[in-house]
Picture 1 (cartoon, one colour):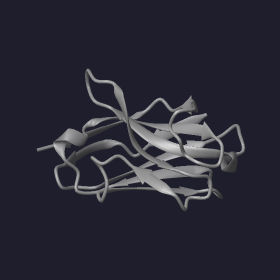
Picture 2 (tube, rainbow, N blue to C red):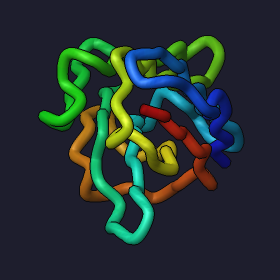
Picture 3 (cartoon, rainbow, N blue to C red):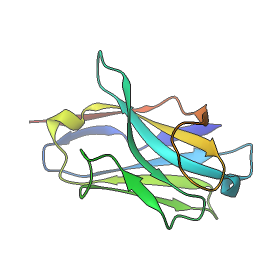
Length: 120
């Protein structure tokens, strides 16, 4: 089970940190990722990270502004978002993919999501 938190309303240029708490499995057996879905659009990849956190990967649209990290002792993955833009407004969902590396193609567990709204 994955439960996201940390979403909310923020002004453009501001920051937010999302958290995703995992339970019910061995956290270190999963690569983790974040996706987002804009209103009326398909879900898109944001960031992914391998099992021990030393290989993050990002969508071009967030590179340099977002940072994914994980704390395996707390079974939690984070998404630090800075320099937020109105186009970052979306529902952000956490994802777990079995295996050590993040591929983003074999996600088997999804969180329900948390709303992020960036005002201009």
